[in-house]
Length: 502
Image 1 (cartoon, rainbow, N blue to C red):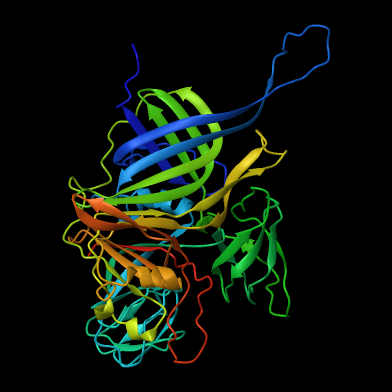
Image 2 (image 1 turned 90 degrees about the vertical axis):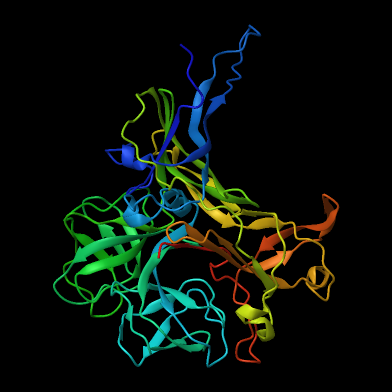
């Protein structure tokens, strides 16, 4: 019998060791993606052999590098009951493999700013008055007039806040007073630029400092410490070994400056090495029994919004070809998303110049009439080749990011919305796009550095429109202190997505 193209399953899971699938993969819990489309293709290098001989008949080639590419389109929707990854949608696993950190966030109601803003994505907050604990980090730029501020804990200590706490941005200098307590509100994704892992360690005394180079005596794994510890617990590391992972209870040797380095350092049991930034994932594609599996995969994501339709995310993932087999499709799969995804309607997008303090308030945003929005994260992928790997390919790495997109607003007079003025001046605008309005199925897409390319004119049933391509530049754009240079470089903030669960 022929196989049926509608019977497709895609399973995804974060890896602990890059390029190695977890032993239980795939399972039904890893397979609940709501698929709009899904394909897989093997990329097997066939090496031609030009052997000198009497006959002109070609000789048999040989196989070189073996990779696999997976393209997965899914609806942007909330998680179904929070059964997976502590309540985050399953497509969040692929977001992380596209270079986006996933964090649990809290919201707290705030009043009006008493010092110029906005709060900047990624900055730490100091807290005074009321009852509070922890060190919160801002998620997504927050402008005067917004009802809530979204934060994540910047340390292992949980963040708590009561009403009446004064929040001050350590970078921006923005000041606001809370009008409610902090409560769990969902998840957020924002871009990162480096791979990072956590590792549980034990030691009797001393300090594991940032910058230490540690090596596992048994595993041979090596890593640089990016966040240290003053007592036994969790450190953050940047792996520098060739696909090796630390093993449970092994001794660690280190190179540290200063006299406070612990005399004995061990990996904890069970070893808790896990990706915290830019993990690789294992992917399994099954079409009615034919199976393609890839490991060490990373990729790129593109979002598509059309008015009165569900929004979608398309992930293009590349990994090492691990197997091609026949395998029965999984049963007992629970859909990862609610039965009804959010529709792009009833959600006004906000757009305005993001380089002057005069436009730093929520109320200053224009509300353009859009019917479509496309965003491409623009991740550049590179094959990490190594002769010691079984197929000469260890994993796929992300080596660059150049986000782009486009919108199609109705044409307005420049006095109403200055599209042409911004394009002419190369002005960077901010774009805030809500999706959905029901907790558990609601999102906000925020882009602080939208730089337009040349707009062109279009027509939508006789209504004049602009077709506007743009670049995502990120950075922090407001001249907050009224005289210091604008910091428009870097920031790992060109696209921040918040998933609101409450």
